[in-house]
Image (cartoon, rainbow, N blue to C red; front, side, top):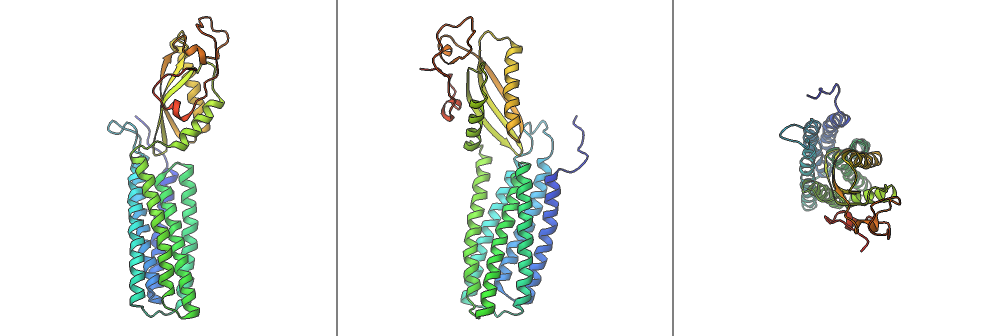
Length: 333
């Protein structure tokens, strides 16, 4: 039985502040709309409703993700963050489309605006607050490997660019009197929002479907080649899956056939420690040990004092993305 945590994880505490801030910023944008009667400001306020909804959704998902593994979830609850991030990406896309619609509508049926100076000031303050809040979320999310928190941060920063576009449109409108400028600028930034939402959805789909993280695998291979032990004759069938902040790694490690259980386990521990020291994830490894097969394995085995060698050593086996993910043992042939 695991002891209950004495304090909330940093990701949950961070998301709680995001929810509070999102509600306050939404209220400020609605105030700016009430003062200006600007459809561009209304568009920005409508997009902030996504911040509020996804803020509560992300908070709920983070609470679930931090639960310990149980009988029904032997790998933990980390993937719920991907569901939350997918929902957020979809809402971002909807918000972008709504902005385009409202902007085009305003071009056809322009609305008179008022008190632009006060509206610009309020909206500008919300833009700065959103950007800082987003940067904080991304930083904490990356440090704690939280996809949901990173998605919240990216959404908040995309909202910042939208708001700055609205401010630019209002400034031009303030000094030129050309009514269509704010709608045109809003459309441009709506496109950026649609692109960001698409990226979030793409990332979460990759996680939900357990798509191989090629960059992570490449980093692993570089690390393993640099710190390869002489008893690690071969490594193959390498697979990685990420569940929230936990990295699950499976592989087959070939060691000398005459190693006993304790000797083989020592090599597994060395492999585990090497990876754990260089990657920030909580690591869970499942390593299957294979005995070497003379004389084929002898060709890539660098153990110089091996008393049962059946063939001369030819060359050091360089592990690559292709051969470590293969399910076959390797030799110099």
